[in-house]
Image 1: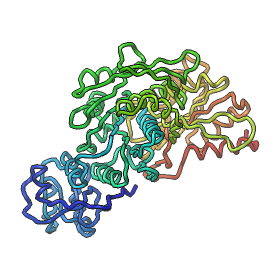
Image 2: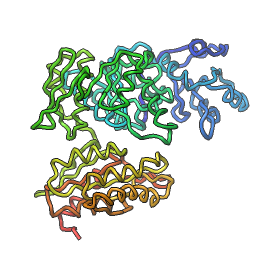
Image 3: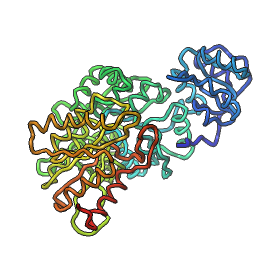
Image 4: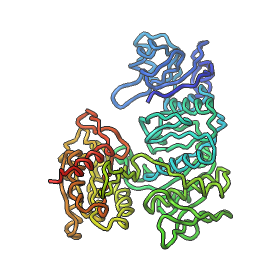
Length: 512
């Protein structure tokens, strides 16, 4: 994504930046008008942040940055030595940990230290994207000019941009926020990843309301263990990052977060004692009542699944905490958020009865189980799950992912999902071990192993075509993604497009 920059650029003396971050004055009259840590994205007048990396140092690319117009460098002592060694005569702002001060620097240069925006930050393992979209769509329905920054896309009013990562790097983030202010955006909803918190990407941003959905095993290729993962999430609930918290306490990690939070926190959940109590209507799983803090709302989830009831409740409570009228919120959250790749039903491109096919981003054991359990009550026939696991990522969750699928689905189709540099067959085997561990007990579960994801989707659809609307196929793992990463090459691949083609082929009689 080419991140937009504000049209009206601030001119910040490099000496002011040095004083801000506690660095020696570089003794220069240079002024900077932007910040970036990507040498390819440098614009004239930028401060180039040359950060140490796992394989190379950003300072190695300072020459390229200077050619594009960088006027100064923020780096560490090792980077400063490299810059001088290359003979580059640029003012240097030198600190021991440049990433730690990058957010404050970007906020100063972008003019985002004191934003006239209401900010909502959403963190957690599952539900971030859906909850953020629910808040954003409700704000739009309420007549607000809302922005969105997240996994699927970035929205600045009516403008939509593809997202590269869940939470942008600090310079990109502050530039986006400055653009939103310029364009009259009054509220912004953001997904806040554990990577972003650990890497100081959201430094310099203070959220009016911070939401915590849940925590389960994920990203242990990045975090040392679950404790480290939790600590990263919990760091959002600190005075320098948020003013008020809204935490789901149906999750044990949420209850623990409340105990240690350094900011005021509202609790939400189905259990007695929560500040915001979620009560599901017995005869309609999508309808529920949200009570708390003098508010009593009758609500309905526009998306299937008990977890989406919780996501909708959190969105509604967050909006009330932002100061929105509760009665208007009750109507606004009914708006269909249309979250790409989140329990997204793909319409059959043909007339007549066809199996229901749903695409979802579920890529953790808990998310897979929740997605399938949401579909089970409305699937009188066969429930099929097409699933894989990403390579070069948390290997310990793969067996549990296969087991989760087998616990609920009648047929599990094990396939590939971004194997990256790993052997795809080895990844499939780990998933299959989980499936077989359940099949030894739940003997009604069948399994197919089809490495080619396109063929896996087609075989899944063909397997239940004769059942028509009684059957459901859940294609999980990739969700909104548009590529399949195999051995370092990203091949175009969109699950929903492959589902449409599978349905079309099955309809014309390709059912062998």
